[in-house]
Image (cartoon, rainbow, N blue to C red; front, top):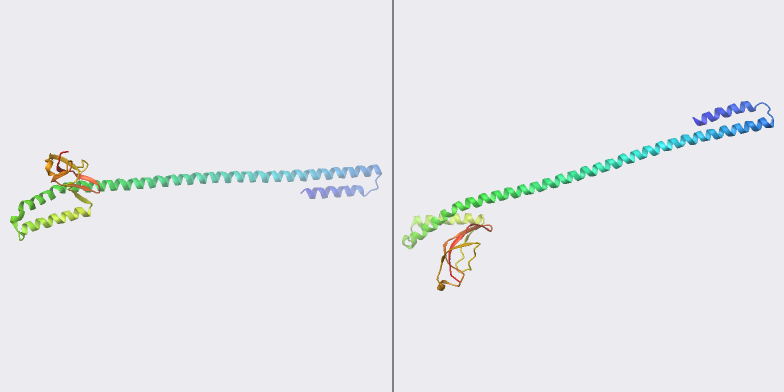
Length: 213
């Protein structure tokens, strides 16, 4: 557009200079042409500067929008990571709670079966040797007791019977005191009632007689 205007002005100056001019007129025309040329150059420079300014503004706006988008992306990523971590913690806690609840239920149920095992052992002891090896009733009771003990072992339930070992209040209750000749001082000389523990947790303390120290 600027070049077209410059051409039109140049054509006008050529029309004017086609007539013979004096030196002063010629100088005036040349001065005018120079002024017009300068003005046209100034217009072009102004237009170019305005276009460059517009481009710089657009580039700055694009850079600002990009920076805002990146910041928002990082914010969403941090939020997603936090939510994922919270969910993993919740899942882990939930698994622990379920396992603890299951173990508590298993321990409670096993505890209810301990008197049954005690009575089976008492029945076998009461039958004694008088029943003989061919007594089917005694054999049946022994088989039931053996099966229950095997089932307990599969669940990690083991008896606490530590005769001859040093008394441990975490595993045993001293309900009677033995004589010095029954063993080393502070040791268990007789187990009156076996205790049981499940995976390190005591279900029932053993009742024992302890040699005095």
